[in-house]
Length: 365
Image 1 (tube, rainbow, N blue to C red):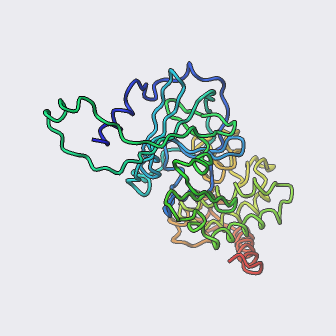
Image 2: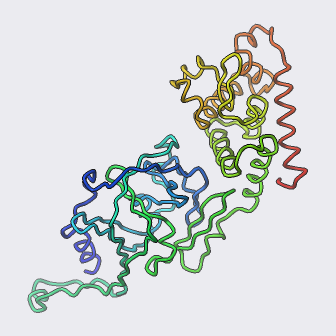
């Protein structure tokens, strides 16, 4: 009976995530969260979320989606008349994303600010079992007793509730401080965000020290050759390189080596021949990928094109990196004819060895 009552409670007089454009106070940009998200030991690939984790004012926001509710253990309902967001604590029913395929491209998002929202967290305290009730019993009782609930107003610490279309987002850190949810959070800028919703299990126990150290090495390699970049931007680049490497089955160290030799990690670099960005992609090549010259200046797009070309070359040339890199630099037709220079490939492979040596000598492996 208690479960039925809670279901009724959630649905009474609630407008379920209807169109909210009339409730938006302003629009802001949310920065895609490039780093890892690990919940209770399982990685949640942010690209596989239709509405992903993102950053706003240096604060990570979590989507109040069905998938995330099933993973973390909550149900969310919004009453637009009172601007009250209700969060009911439930049992988690899945470990990771139900559909494990990319649903977004990793770009930043336009978000609606929904101000003046009160967030109320609920937890059922009654542990009574549902009893079979006959019509006669109902008549004799006259009323159905509701389960005992712990109710708490969640402190948003001055941050707004945000929305994309009909989907809402809240700062994940408020769940850490909530007495109802009491999540444990651990963040490492070289690794990502770890969340534990399990009692007596720390979020840090899901963190990988070795992966964090490896990523630190890649960041320091970039900064070693381009000290004008900020450390936070270099961290973002590393996660972009790693994502592209994973998608196109390429070693991220090879992608870093190419970017080192092509642009010294300068996303705005333009060569005398017109090649653009980190991986020095020609506008005609970018057009084949549906990208404009301006879009090639975006580091994520530029890295993805370069990684796709290298990944395709590795398949076409059976892993022969000299031919792969020569085709990347001079075109596949010259490689096919056999009248190509190997000088570019030699330079890149030297840089690739340099990345490996840098990691090894400095203890990042």
